[in-house]
Image (cartoon, rainbow, N blue to C red; front, side):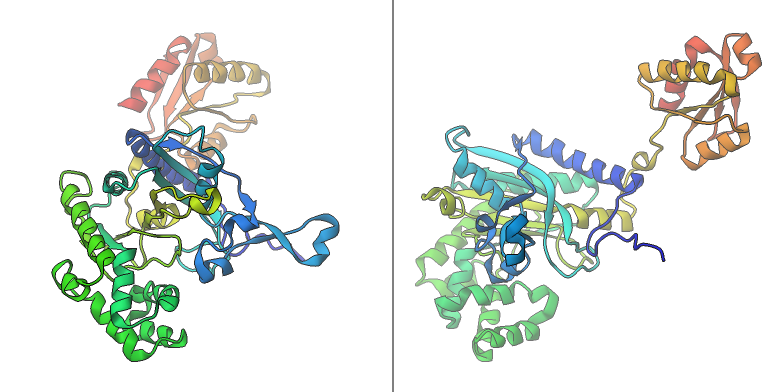
Length: 439
């Protein structure tokens, strides 16, 4: 009986080509974020369970991977630790812990895996990477614009040219729910249901709301309000609600000030955008791509989250790109540059026979010293087998140290792309290979 070799459900193994594509995307993200002045941060894979519980709403709490107490406490079934659910709550903890060591305006990016006990589906995994960018310390809407500009530039550099940014505000949502007659105590439940609008459509949301104790006619009235234009229609309905009107003005300001940035022209005000995480307090945003179910990422302002750890509110705003979703879409739409799929090796050194192993080792070391990526075939097989191996690895050049070549102080270099074979002085091998790689 053979062992089950599949990875745990909702997780994946990443073979070399997968890793190269992932590193390419992460490289683009890191480069853009750093050019916008964001600094790197990393936090542990698991947190104290009380750090995470209560930060993501009722639905989020159910998806936290809990870690049982160890040793003699394991039999109790109690958990005291949990795997990271996202990167935002750990950031809030870090800000609270290191507040005296951080700058007044702390801008950080973080690219690490997170874990959620969700039901796996296409593009949805239990272990996945998030690419977060956040700014701490100011309520200025320039932060939202800076974040959206950075995210937009990332997507443009990756080849996404038809995405839109859906934008809304929690205060506006609160005003609309109140205007529809939904009591404040039910707003959290209502937002969880409304967040599913693009997945289960209007009737599905009304049914979900009814299951949460919100009458169908009230739920329908709320959804009708979400269809009003911003800001004119909203102002007429919410003119008595000061905070909601303030939210509308903030959204207008973000759209207007973004005009000259990479996010300019891509922002669409969408009153139905809810995003279910309970810690959002102001603007909420999401990236949508045509013909794609779900989004490529989302975020918003969370001015109260740090205060849960610190005892005083600290304004904050951020965005999280979904790396897994980006990778899936780019692979399906052939968006990766050809260079990403190129071989991981520039040249392979063959073994002529058992007695020439030391000579092949020395040549491989010489080529590596020159900056080339070099593989050394480990056995004195027939050259045909060695060429076949190099071809399977997509290695462009193979170096042959035959008896005649070594006698003349040369090597033979075979270009597996064209089939040509050339004799080259041993001292000139690295220059020859580099010239043709760059040509």
